[in-house]
Length: 281
Image 1 (cartoon, rainbow, N blue to C red):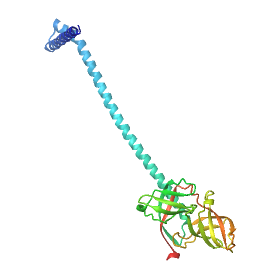
Image 2 (spheres, rainbow, N blue to C red; image 1 turned 120 degrees about the horizontal axis):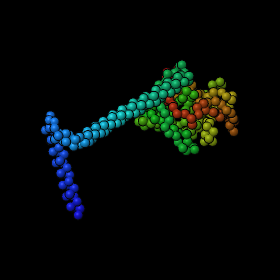
Image 3 (cartoon, one colour; image 1 turned 90 degrees about the vertical axis):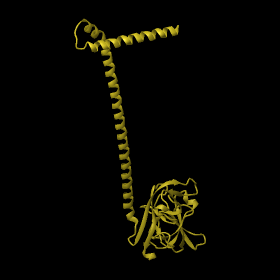
Image 4 (cartoon, one colour; image 1 turned 45 degrees about the vertical axis):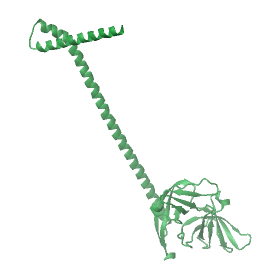
C-alpha cells in the first residue's frame, strides 16, 4: 500500500513538473504574441512566477541577513579585542604610576652620601607558619637580585634576601627569628644588634640587644642600620624604641623595637642590589 502511494505521489509530481515546464516554455514562445493562448498561459503561470519571485526574495533577504550578522559579529569581536587592549594599557599605566609614586617616596630615605642600585618587586607569597615571617617576591637573579640584598620600602627596612632563583626570591623579614643586623640609635649613637624573637614576632616587634649598660635610649628614638659588616647600607630606618631593659647580669641593655614597616601589609618592595657610601670607599 505504501509503495502504491509513493508511486502515485511520484507520478503526480512528475505530471505537475512536466505541466508547469510546458507552461513556462509556452510563455517564452508566446512572449511577443497576443491571443487567447497567451492570456491563458500567462494566467496559469503568473502564480508560479509570483511564488518563485517570493522564494527568491526571501532567500536573498535571508542570506543578506546572515551576511550582516557575520559582519556585526566580526565588528563586535574587534571591539572586544580593542577594549581588552585598552584595559591592559590602563592597568600598565596604573602600575607605572604606582612605581613612580613608590620611587618618589623612596627618595626620602636615600642618604645623600650613598648611592643605591635598586630593583623593584612585588610580594607574591607569604609563609603561613606562626614562627616565620618569610615572603616570596617575583624577581630573581634575572633582575640582578642576590642573597643578602637589603629589602626596603619608602618607610624603611623590610628584611633581606635569604634565597634566590632565576625569577623569584625569598625575603626574611626584620621580625623573623632568623633576622640579625647591626643597628645604631639615632640620638645617643650607641650600637647594638637587632634580631627577631619568637616571643615578639606575634606583636610584630623585634629586639635590640647588646647595647652598652650605660646606654640611655629614649622611648620613640629611631633605630637605623649602622652599616657595620657591609651587608646593609648605613642609615636605613628599622624602627623606634618602645621600651628598654637592663639584662639580668647587668652587663648590657636591651630595647624593644617597633618596626617602621608593617611587614604584613606591604605589597611592593625595593631591593638594594648595590650601594656605595663613605664607609666602604
